[in-house]
Each structure stands twice: as structure tokens, then as C-alpha cells.
Length: 188
Image (cartoon, rainbow, N blue to C red; front, side, top):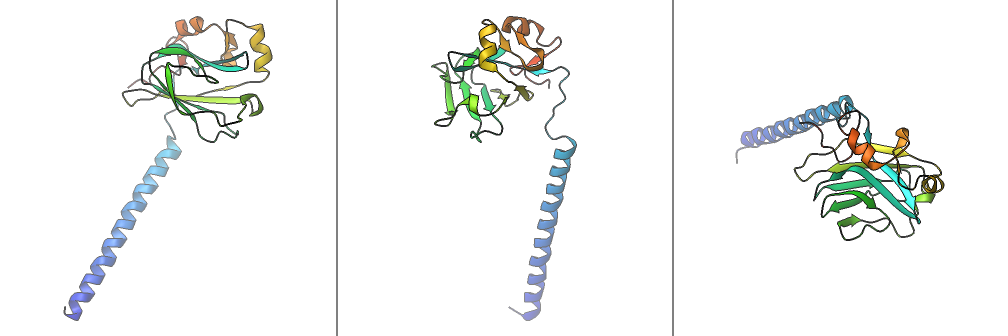
């Protein structure tokens, strides 16, 4: 190969690499700018809710509205030893889940870590739902204290965060009116 062709080839490789890096850089900048301006579409019209309670040392979640078959609930206790979300796929529509002993109506891809005690791990739980069609629910979180003691005072209710202790049927009746549940798909 003639020396001038080697130079042209080298310049072409360098320019092509710079264009690729610049393109990736612009793509990354665009991606991060979008994340900053719209991190995760979090603009539900109403509060997004789920309920929690403890019965016989079992941590229960109420979605109030049944989540469909094959929906995946991702449950996180932030700031805990459970860095990985507890991931639960529903085998049939359900609106109540025993997170301590999920049972045959679900498959669990990630269980609570060995020795994990929700009661020792903080005062917050977060949930998002991935639906079979690929869409997802809005993010929701519940902050709690004294959950075990208070659950005994409200035997047929769940703690729905700022809304307080409510019966799941009451919450389901309000779904789409003045609140959304974690099993309510985002509008398209």
C-alpha cells in the first residue's frame, strides 16, 4: 500500500471514530437531558396508592384493584439489605399478596433475602407494576411506622399511606375517580 493511502486510511479511521464518539456523546447527552427534564413520567392526575398491613408477622400488600395475570410487581424496601427489588409475577388476577409467604398464585423471581425482616429494615416500601403488554403503572410508595401494632387495630383494613387505614373495596371504588392503584395502567 502506498504511503499516502495509509495516511488517508488512518485519517478516515480517526475521523470515523470521532464521529462515532460524537454521535454517542450527543445521544448520551440527549438521553440524560431527557432523564433530568422527565426522569420517569410521574405525573399522574391522582395519587397512586397501595395498602400494607401485618397479620401474624406476615407482610401483606393490597393493590385494591386486581392486577392482571402475568403482571409483575416490583417491591422495594429502600435503604434496606434488600438492594434488589422483590419481583413477583402473578399467575392469576389478585388484589392481595402475602409478601412473606407468596403462595401458589404467584412466581417470585427475587425473594426477600435470607434473614431479611421488613420490620428491621426501615419505614418505607415502594411498588411499580409492569403489565403483560409492556406498559407500567405509576410509581407509588408508603411510609409507615408501628405497622404491626396498628394493623391489630384495623383488622379488615390496609394502611394506604397518607390516606390512612381503608378497606380495599373502598379504595377500588375510588380508582380513577380521585386516586389510582398500582394496578391501574398509565393512560396511553
